[in-house]
Structure formats: C-alpha cells, structure tokens
Length: 179
Image 1 (cartoon, rainbow, N blue to C red):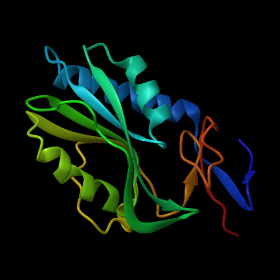
Image 2 (cartoon, helix red, strand yellow):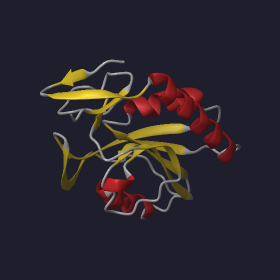
Image 3 (cartoon, helix red, strand yellow):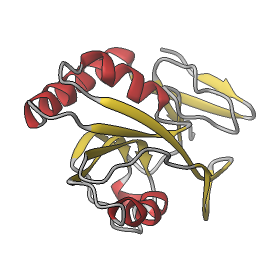
Image 4 (cartoon, one colour):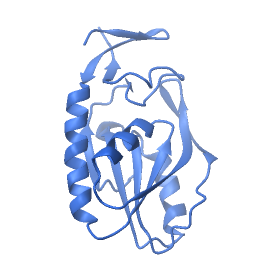
C-alpha cells in the first residue's frame, strides 16, 4: 500500500483489507454466539458504515435484519458539533434486540445524541458495534459493546469513510499523513 491523495490531502496506509476482514470475522463469531436463537435488528449508520455493515453481514450465520439511518456531524476533516438526522428510523424496535453499527466513534457526539432516541423506543436490548474508535478524541461517553479497532486521533479515509465525499471506495483504511 502506497501513499494516496484525496482532494488536497495525502494519506498513508493504516489498516489493510485483510486486517479489517479478520476483525470482522472475529466480530461476527462473537455476535453469532451472543445472539444465537435470537433475531437481532442491526441499525447501520450511513454513510460511513455501509461497507462495514455489508461485509459484517456476510459473516453472520444468525437470523438477522438490517435497516439504515443517516446521521451526520462532519464537514471536511472536522466534526461540526451538530448532529443532523437526514434519514430516520422507520422500523418498530420495541422489544427487539438492537445493535447499532457505526463506522467510527470520534468525539462520540453523534451516538450520544442518537442512543437516547433509540432507548425511548424500548428495545429489549441495545448494543453498539464500532469499526473504529478514537479514545483520545472522545468527549461524549458512548458505550461500545463490540469494537474492531482503537486508533490514534488522526483523520482516516477508506473502507466507507470519506473526506468531503471521496475515498469511501478504497478497500483499506488510510490515515492523514503528517511529515
């Protein structure tokens, strides 16, 4: 993996496609065990989690459903601090086992504002599965039940994550390059 350029920024390789898929297989095995005999509903947070959700689902052997919501708090490489719900939840989650699929928890603001909305709908259980977490950047507590990778507080792109709309289609994850 070589350096790549997205818009005006240079990114260096961080996680390979193989490393990502190994973690997804481990996560799926844990979810298959934890939800054996149940039919959980996965709620994937768009746009960033679409690859994470799609690839994770390929490894699940349990009966499971998925729906998508769209929340946003980023502009460029910085969080705006404002969470926007662009597409809402249109599925009844009362008494359902719900697992939120999130690509990345940075400050935690997005999920900290969304989780109470889900809790108010009285699911049987509510868990959060995250591909990437930046502990150094976290300002709002979000319970993470399933985590693939903890990463440094650097901007990342690829595998569904973008920089101003570009880079989502990159199979690996790259981090912002600094000299």
